[in-house]
Image 1 (cartoon, helix red, strand yellow):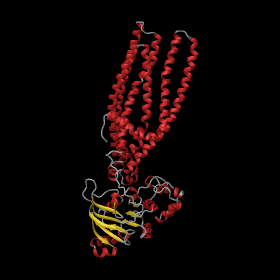
Image 2: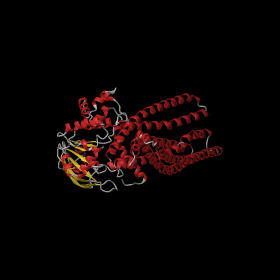
Image 3: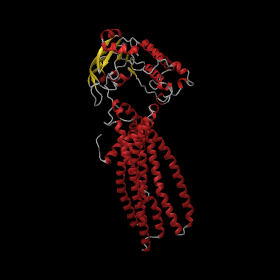
Image 4: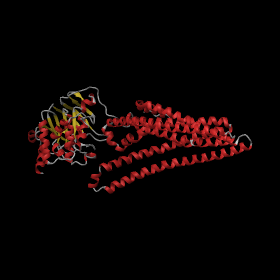
Length: 581
């Protein structure tokens, strides 16, 4: 997005943010009406109180009771207005916040896989959780401060009719504060930007520490991780200290300005009284306004800071929603409702960012309902082939076709609704077993869930649990064993019933007995689905229709298990080495 001047930038983001307020804009307007009502009361009460003082001074006691009750009634109305405004605020704020959070979350899910892996989770968590608060609240705060400033203007106008010299003094003070606070807000934003960057980094690392707690313990790396956490926290502490110091410095200077105004008002008031240009009663009225006008200092400071925080939060949020910093996945427009399962690689080469080629000019064809296993040493490029089929990455050269249509011409649904991937390290969500399954198919019936779990050899285990399918498995499926997590991931993929199923070393964490059960399930699916398997052990894929041997990003053999044993020395060597283990 093109960088604009500060005012234009703020207006630019306000316009964008308002799109998310439309659903609950009636509450925003009601809040505005309520705020104007409260503004009138805030101006009226000091005036009525001042009149009371004058009436007492002039011994018009007959009006005292009436004025007192009027003020009391106005205060009751003020409390009622505050109550209603709190209701309007909550109805508006939480709707807008939800809409923005869903939008940022949605756009985060569209960010290219490579970009997501380059950044810590804290970068996205902070934007979704905290920056959206700032955006959702901005119109409420603008109304709050705008109506407050209007009430101060009302007070200043009434001051004009009391004494022009005092009016000029107050007005000059307000103008001086305006430019002072504008400068302060600019400096505070610079510090706040750095603080937020440090907070992103620290939050991301803490998130990793919590999620990886088990491995940290097993690796005996607690001290190392805590030292690293201390480093990030010190960085954050220094940034926070610098921000707080800047705020405190400007707050101190503004306090001095307020003290100077107090002194000048008293001196001017005494002088005017001595010159008989001001009555004592009027001076009391002027001094009663003092608190309201004095407070504009902190209010101006806050509104400038809020606008700067809003601008910064907007940059961070809209950077994800529509910026170039986090490029999104792109898909074509062609739709394939039900794929047959024909996959073609045509002279495909691929490399990750700033790396050498991982795949070198590979070509192969997978027929519909064929079971094909990719075998080879670790790091040979097998998982990269799966990532390309699943459209997590795009080839740098060559084409990948699904049912004869180039993958980059198909829309997202054509790919994701026809291809399931069961990975080596599946992420299990902190939900119940049933919710982990229904999150990928909301309308799944109890029978479908049970069938998928039986096929994945998980149902019997689930039935031993106290809460059965309603058992919450913890973050990352921490309460499950590695094999149980993979079986749940397999059940999750089977529930989708996609035409193409990719097993990316999905049985590597399973014990021999469970692995045999899963292999039998896969054999049962053979001929019904197009199944691609990355094998951890060659013995588990000998019954595949074909095996493709990959080495150093190249295909160096293709055929059945028996054919490769006869014709490919590398495959023969790998197989016999495994038999010796």
